[in-house]
Image: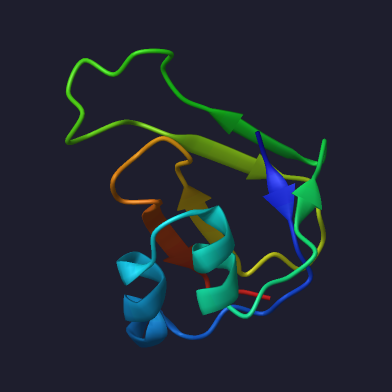
Length: 90
């Protein structure tokens, strides 16, 4: 399931609150995001079952213009925020 929101995510050093959050709504709130909705413009590829839960290869492709940050949120995990990738490219 992929979600899109028009919020600009803060710099990587400000992600601590999001990583400490539990639940999708709390993670979105930590990023200042609201109104996240499913988007067919974002494709996520991940294994159905990970061989090693510590390292799970995930590939994300977005057709949305101007994407500078991607956050991987995991609904059924003790750590809801799995990772964040920020890009300085325009």
